[in-house]
Image (cartoon, rainbow over all chains, first blue to last red; front, side):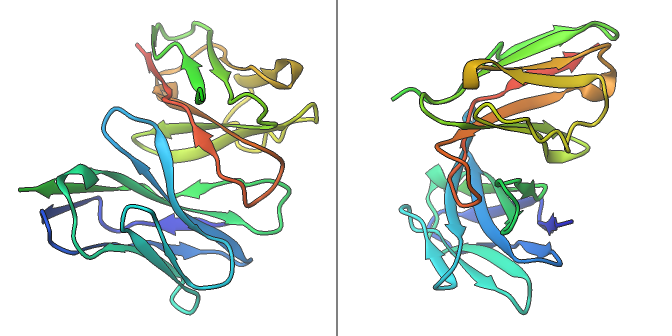
Amino acid sequence: AQSVTQLDSQVPVFEEAPVELRCNYSSSVSVYLFWYVQYPNQGLQLLLKYLSGSTLVESINGFEAEFNKSQTSFHLRKPSVHISDTAEYFCAVSEVNTGFQKLVFGTGTRLLVSP
Amino acid sequence: GAGVSQSPSNKVTEKGKDVELRCDPISGHTALYWYRQSLGQGLEFLIYFQGNSAPDKSGLPSDRFSAERTGGSVSTLTIQRTQQEDSAVYLCASSPKRGTTDTQYFGPGTRLTVL
């Protein structure tokens, strides 16, 4: 079985500051890794995912995450945040060799960007 | 195009009553997932459908929960004899095909409150 830990339930940050949202996972088998975002009053949306290849993956809105196998981490970073990045961010994993993508989510981190 | 839709958006019921929650996946998507987002448990997988194959029910928390998918499209999640711990947001997601690497597209959810 897999588990995902997001230690920070809430991260307050000022606009244009850098941010890192932490994600650690536990699994005895190979996993794919995902970050989902839930904007206020909207549904979950995929932000980025790591499947294979380069350990650094990027989203279209400036976020990036790096898969670190030795530390079992997949932290999400952005060098300069905007007010519009205010949302809840969920890290998730799914086992590589199952027949379908059974996502196991962390408890989420609420990013609060203030002016 | 149209995304995943769910109805109702909110449902308030009394303990012991049965409820039905509906999910309309994106047209052409063969894979359909149900998740539950609750304060105590975070986001957890409930059930997976792929086309007309038998579903994976490994995440259903009790035999009071059941789901069906008619014609490989619309899905209904039924909760019998609701309990207060069933209060949560129930999310549906669909993806284009069977696989562990596809993106899941989430609906807005149904907020269930059991009094």
